[in-house]
Image (tube, rainbow, N blue to C red; front, side):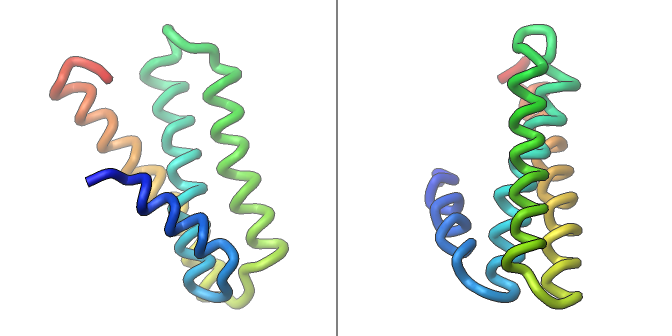
Length: 105
């Protein structure tokens, strides 16, 4: 299964309202933040930290902009913020496991 389809769906859901927007934001921002943390902690020796920092800042910027402009209500806000953290953590754990199991990505 390719994850491109899921990313496309999340990008389309950014234009929705309510919980869909929060879930889409959490998915996309979480991937950016998770990849940034992975890059800065695991593969920083081979790639510039500027690249990884920019990805992380992009994820945080997406979350911030969506919270300010589109996501309303306590449940969607909590979903977007907690979801971003959860997706970032899952991304970091999964990539670390894959890297350990297969000797690196």
